Image (tube, rainbow, N blue to C red; front, top):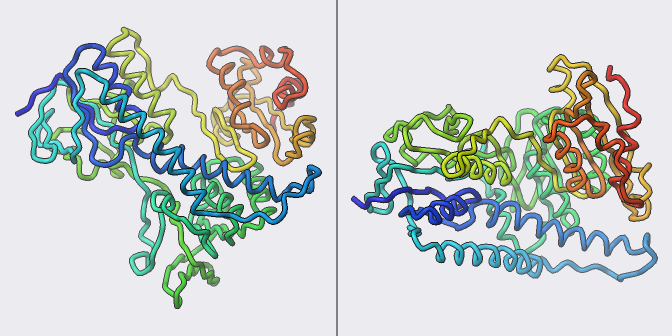
Length: 453
């Protein structure tokens, strides 16, 4: 039995950072990773996809040259070169992470599959490891839904999409949520015909009706075909193509992407042997400070079901480290929901949506402004979308916002920070912002709030 002071399972977003804190505290630590340092975000998630989004936007803007007074000629997409750029960005990140871990004096990196064999005892590639503190950071992976015919056709997930070095003739995407729509727009801009098939009545079921409708309009303006309310979905081979059948319709594509959600990587972790409780989907049950039901075991990141983002995984690390080392009782419930949809223009979302705010029983003030009102958006030639906010009419505190438009994923943080400060909306409404910027219209928006119906 190899004994450690602490073991971290998984080298995703939270794992290496926590290992660094354990190292700094002089604790003998093992970090176990079975596959890729950096996990989803670095290898097949945020970093590579936003690199592809960047290439797709540059291609799109080159095609729009006439709107800005120049001609770039015919735009030819070299998908192999696009992939090489993406791979280079990923490699820079993974090399940096590997160097960081290697420099930790008290940390041993073990490349193996980890599995609990008893409480706080692990098997890692045939090595028996024990520690009083174990931190689970195993992340998640794409769900492969049980659609009739799914085992009979070739399909892609967000992971295998990263290996494409040719533009598909016709990419059919099953799933009209965040991952699916980002891939839809980028590959349309690379030159593929793209069709999105969504089972729900609308795209992005979590979002307000007007937000989902405007995003659909933005994508359809670029030539993306969208079908919602798809019933009786079936997959089958059709010659050399893949047929997606639904609602009496049939669409044939050269490539199929399944983007219908994610599941945690906990099925082969030995949770029962460790005494770790999990829900029916495999998400580990944790308290407000990421502790599991097993003494001395914490779970961070996607696997705990308390967030599905890199930033929530990082915050889990901060919560665990603050409680262990800083005598700072930080909690998961302290954070305000926030995320973005990285289409172009992006959607920045914080706090409640309309349905959640109305369900809370509060009296609401609401405001909405089209991006066409924003001078900077006209100057940039980017007037699609709108801004909307929700405010508690009694406390004057911001409850939520959706900023769909130029730089919306960045601008929304000015609202988020005021929400964390628990200050009234008048704090930002009375602030003097720089002209000409997109953000300067936030005070104008907040100055025109009306009682919500």
